Image (tube, rainbow, N blue to C red):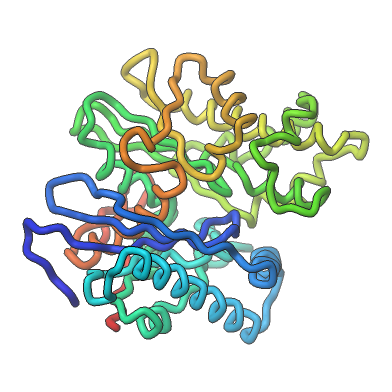
Length: 380
């Protein structure tokens, strides 16, 4: 295990591939004890079409062969190594200069309540042993299952990083991630109060799936197609009847609940496709607004830092603003963290927490029985 002087910065790389399956994000992060983490550099590697199709199939497969899982995991790991190599090369860094890589892996299924009376589980495809071999760096991985073992949801984990990143700012803070799914964090002004964080529902996962069904691309650039449609209020009402939207925190979700078949069960067949797209954006905006309403805000107005790929969807952002008139939407780039890199940064920070024997979860968020040190260490 590599160590550094307590007061000197250490370099970590965080790797993230979210439920949108668009590629690998690699963030080079500097961490100095006592100060918020700093983003130094980034690299992104797009998900090849073949691997995208493999992973998407596995996410919705009722069963899978071991060979399928192994092939997808191997290809995914090599893509991660490609992202790390690109980042190191661009920055002129050697593997020995990196304290550790924090690898989230690719979520295939997330079932914190179990399935058909079985045990709770969360499955991320990853091969940290191979990643350590390919990069020459220490790797920290498997962050979620320890929280799950302690009775938690194993998600979301980002709120703990949000606290480390933005918790030293004055006043209460709101942070929203619009990835495949949307998760919301409330950082209270009073340090003795517990952080609140939870998944509010789908974000890009349904928007991307519906768009891909009707177009050749993977996503609706800037929400242009959604903006051309009309919100179907009757469809929206049916979608919002899903019990998840009415569950109190702690709560988390994934593709096993919100997927194309779930949406299509709510369709009558008379809807125009572009109207469905507009309605899906509205579903995200409304469910986020409902989440904000659940928070114990101390002020009538608030600032919401919005990250994730959905932050680039102009139509979605406009609908969010419409449903949150007392909330100011702000880019985290104004604070040194561009929208696309907070999630990858979180796993760099989680690697740091693991190497220093510090908790990576927030029991008030995940519902775990207490703080836990998350992840396993794989030396190069």
